[in-house]
Image (tube, rainbow, N blue to C red; front, side):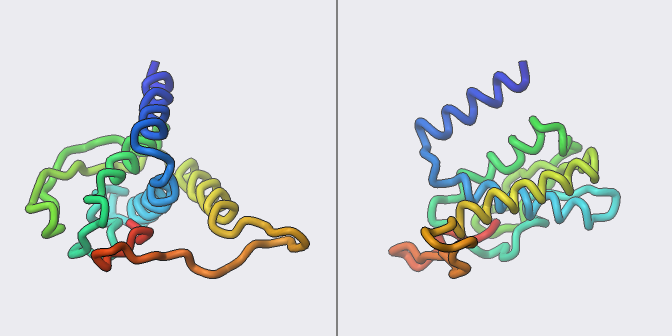
Length: 150
């Protein structure tokens, strides 16, 4: 049942929202898992995995909910409460706190996501073994980094 709901959610995201956020979500999941692995008692929130709390996302960060949803449905994290966000653009809105369930599974997920990202960001070209290592960060019209990590 849970996997069915997740599959529907992914299908909805890809159909309605589009695939453009897949890379952001994967980077966000890596950042959150690393934050939880390093945190005391393996507890934390998305704010703790955010590199710049003052940054306003070009797309208002709507994709950030998918970071936690996927990890939760996969059984990697579980909700343990809520805190107020420290990000000024969020105006101290409620933010879920998460506990890492299985450190070994989290490390395997990080490796899997990193491998997927490597293939996406540095696709092999004809006649080469690896792809380009050039960063793909772009600025939006407002000057915000559209591909910024979580």
